[in-house]
Image (tube, rainbow, N blue to C red):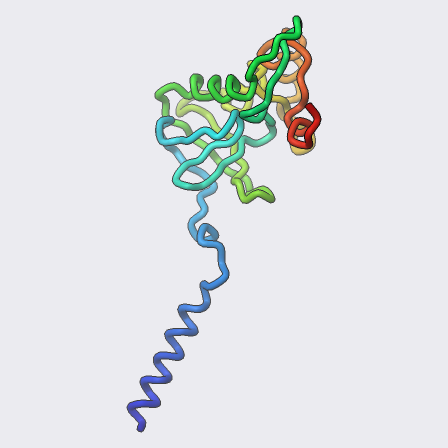
Length: 174
């Protein structure tokens, strides 16, 4: 009888301890805010979102065209600016090691990061805006506004013709 009660007590204690983690997101305990990885270990979803070790990361302060987004040249020809923006980010990464440092997670559970190539001063975030493959995401940061202004003035990347801002494109404005 005493032995049965002790067994039941230990079983209940074990169940209580095990149930403490139920309902928590699996990533909540292991979500890295920073990483260093070879570029070939990263999956690029588009020009501002990547995956490393099954965690989604969003480049801070920028908004690149969506993968399916189409842009126009100054002569009215259409081109796949979203695909090309992603390609330019991959090209810039080359075979280098990428270092990303996070700030927080957004409402889509992506870690907001600033990334650079190992040993480089320039961030990938800044590169994308300066080279015209992303816009400064002014709603969240003013860090890349001057870079966007310069890229627009010089007609680089998506600024080679009329462009719909990625945030408007996602809302259906095309």
